Image (cartoon, rainbow, N blue to C red; front, side, top):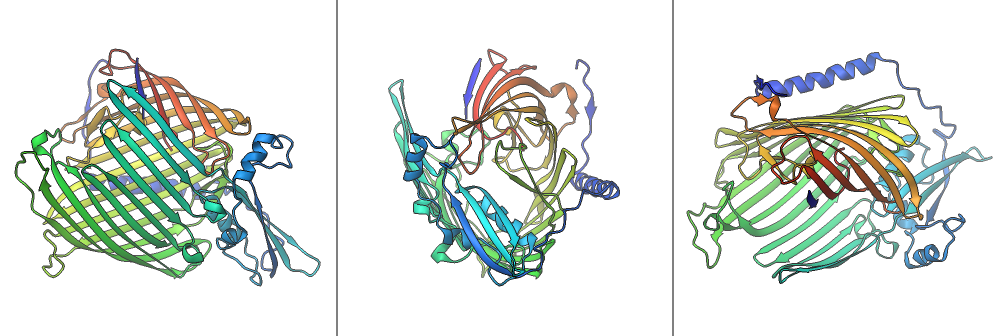
Length: 556
């Protein structure tokens, strides 16, 4: 058994070209949308009595990690945890609200505010209640429930004369301010890595002005990044952002590099962006985004090593243009990807085209002309207890007139909530690449959804994956700390080069059982998955059994 912590006749089929494939994927989305439009509409939400009335008061109710008014939470250990945790301050919550006293009540803005709060790493749930008082105005109560935000990282292992050590601390809600900070040290053998992080979603107490800073140092490697962002909301007239980063580390263009192929690469990037809403609405978004990004990469030999040819400096300044065209049709569900958390999904048709252009200009220091087009399309459907999520994407890279790194992708997920504590999940994905960068091949394995064959067992230009999971939710809030579940799964997939046709006999299949453990008091409620898989085909290992312990669901 390998443990990982982190048909007889052959038939060949040809693969269509990428533009043809993209057109087919977009046509499929259009057909599905037309089918859904022709089908009976979902039951409309009942009218909201408070809609359009003036908001006279807003009350913020913040709840600690454990509700000690509940006898199940009124225990010594839970009361001690609450005392150790600083509840989120009311002003932090109020800055996330998209409405204020004196405004007309808009149910869509109230729901969007709750979604924004649920997306914060220190809030595990948020809900609003509105009542019409005797004066004919509206009283709004926003209730939030804190998550446990302190994480202690500690591990030690010594084997074969080598010591592996990891120690660190992470807090996502420092003193209830919403600010996050982290520090860690990781020693793997002789090398040690130090990292620091900081994030503030309300910098200088400004609404939705986000600042993040990360720094990592290790022998021969550095990584620094500073980001500033003020994102869109449905009624925001504009948005802006900026980023500065510097990276240093070992690099090679060879698929299987030798020590002589390794070089030191320094990459510096900086960019700014600005977006304008063509119209503000709670039903749809129509936005245009523009930006400027400069990138420079230098290559040097590693001290003390013999190096081959050294690439010349790469430098480019990109003019960026993009758009957001999205219908807003959100639903809230449970037990799709998470256990006890409310999940938000937008079913509306969304199209996001982007274009980055590095023009040939000595003034901008561009060493090679590049054009980087990209488009992403998403759509969702819901009928009764069924949820369908579709997405497709296409990207390419034109460098000095040559077209390379073309990638077309399609993904579909289908979820059926047949029983109260059970979800049947189907997933399929197809990625078609052509002339991909040798350092960025498509990979398939345990971390990508094909269990039983190693972490990154297969690499190539084209990839197919199909999964079935029966997700069983066994126990909610065990010891008031843990959600427990299980899965039965079937995986099938493979990766192959673009130079030859597909052979069905090359598909790799596996079956197995899994355990899911999710912290019920965390904001993400993301499970740790322990999967025991049996490879139905040769997995190039001594045993076809494989045990993996990884974070998150196998697919989404």
